[in-house]
Image 1 (cartoon, rainbow, N blue to C red):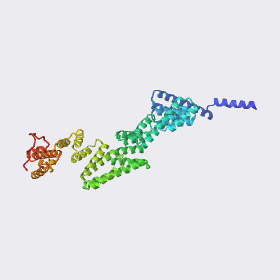
Image 2: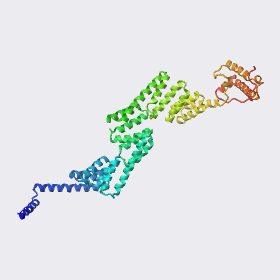
Image 3: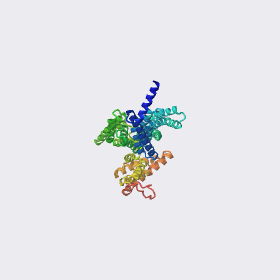
Image 4: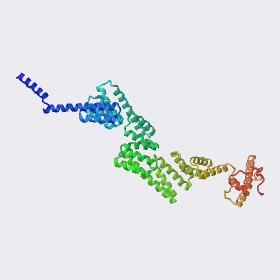
Length: 476
């Protein structure tokens, strides 16, 4: 019986080999053919990969996978190709499928870790590299990549701390270093873009957000950053549209919700202030601009305008020093804000701070060389020049619009007040001071009582020195 079984087994085996029509043999032949075909696709993919034609390599590795979907190396090869094409999310899926099929596939674990790194998931990457080191403790590539993952985690921690402390420059610095490793991490890009916006570097922030939206038009974070840039550039209506769109994509996006609320409140309060100002209700306008300034300290451009608006209302209320301070606050926020310089310069003129006014008008004229600005600068320079002379109106104690009779009366009064005979019993120092004042009164009257000299004096022209004015006043 034993011999018979062996013979039967042998005969059956022999029959399978010589009878291709047998179903089991047909299956084996088909399987062998698929493997052979898959290997052919793989070899073609390898050839294209070595030529750096990654798109064609991807196509052939896909054919190999379709022909033989249970081979880990095919997924590993396609993952490597996808990484070269910067399609890291797809590469991650292939790497994970490769190690699911073969948990000892070291290249699969390495590629999975590298994909996690590129996508900014340092902890997941570290787990992958640790798996490689379990399989091969001396694997230098895994050791180095693991250190890179630790460095990435440290940059994340530093960035989080910097954002909490509002040190946005530090966050941008950390994110630049992190993105050198995690080039495909949208989260890092968004954080960098948000901080660039908070630093007032709007074009850079917009560029980063736009790059993400080109790849994913529904990315709520990128929509929020685009809105934030517009909001900080005082394009509030457009900003609200982006915030609303972000909230449609992610209804629980807290930053977009807060920014949208602030934008609407800021616009409404500013418009209320403007309307009150138009209605000549300057007290109400001043208060409304003050309330608007409290809504969002980060909105530099809008707040600069609010400070300037409040300065305008303050000037109307004769709060000139406060108006100057508000203009200075506006300029501190936006040193290119011409309107704030002009408003402050006018306040300086009104408070007779002519040197400061000239400085502001010079700044304006250097920026915008218009005839109006040139006229304002010349007028301020003239007033500065006049302020450095003796003010004969002050000497006589009259206003600049005083009539001839008022000038005469003022002269008589001041001349009697400072006449030397009146102070003959005073100390030598007092006599000397009063004599000096008496002469100044005479000079003032000589100029202001002469229509031609008065016109020249009022226009800031130098008066001819004809030997002084001593003794040229009128008789008492």
